[in-house]
Image (cartoon, rainbow, N blue to C red; front, side):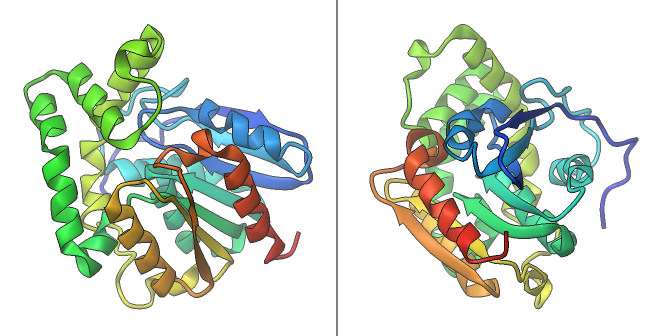
Length: 270
């Protein structure tokens, strides 16, 4: 059951490309919709990508703190599924995409889950990898609880990204990451505990569309357990690995990501 709260918050959106496929792309935490620019550019003649900014990210308003954060994001994004679309999600955005596919399967033509942080799967299948993840992440949440959100964002970015070091990032980027970090612990109920009940028997059967589970070979080990676990649980899922890539592979390896998505699209009708 969803938590009670006020009216749905409005989110900002961006569009990329002019191709015939309608695509909805959901970014990771402490990023923004512009993170899809490179990948969408490679697909621009094939797809028109609609990319919303998560609450507390990009041009969207700050989350009002009410209800469950994943519920609020699903509620905000669902109205964008106005017709059958191809759905792409990265990291926490992939967990939202999976929810949408289960709850609105008639509107999701294909589903690409890139590095989904649905660690509840790994808690069932490989709890030792979740424990190792938690030990590595502990300094992030120590800084957060101490009120140093900038340090928490810096450590979170270091753990999940192999991109530029924090001091080399533009001040506006660091500020945006610090703004977004407060929603990350608010995702724990959905990410670690499966608050939405997706792993209950038979629930994932609703997501019968073609599914791609994509990860980098250099990502956090727990992601491999998540992807392989979801591949076993979903009716029509295939798992792929991009060699040399980490968690941020849609940005760092857009060509290989685009190729994997094209293979997914070739499995279904245009």
